[in-house]
Length: 192
Image (tube, rainbow, N blue to C red; front, side, top):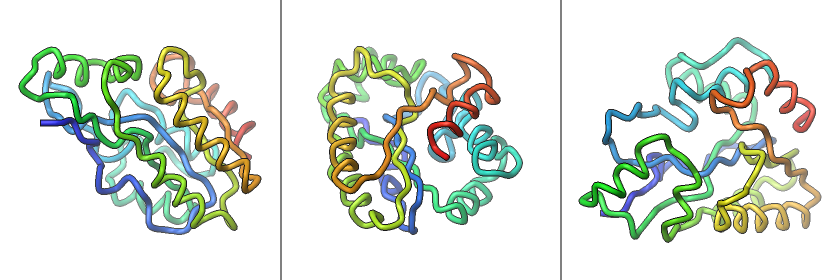
């Protein structure tokens, strides 16, 4: 069975947007005692929900219930999505695939697979919000070693350029590469 995105049916926010945050992939499989997120960036080792209020105002949402997080992003006209929607050639019967996709959640491992991208839907979302969208932001500062993802992010950058919508690559909200305060400064400088 292929590995669909955990939030496959939520990849396209249906509210008006001023800001769109784009990640890579969250596997739907529940193996290796992997912590399962309640929503995008919802794992404890990810600081997205700490950094976001440091940029846009408010208290940390890291351990808040999903409805509180959703209320916050809807009120602030923030959308969240991912580039990869499905990995059709991964098999839940293959232990190697399970280990690659559910241990560590490394984007570098994705390059070993055929990926189905959400890029056309993201472009439709940008088109729909082009009059209000202030920026589209990739939550990863480098794209080395992940060529398929880099190529699709490039398509989104080109599409945004057409509408004069700012794009930026942000420092990862993961728990490495600096704390929330340091990353929020990078985010503020690039977003606001």
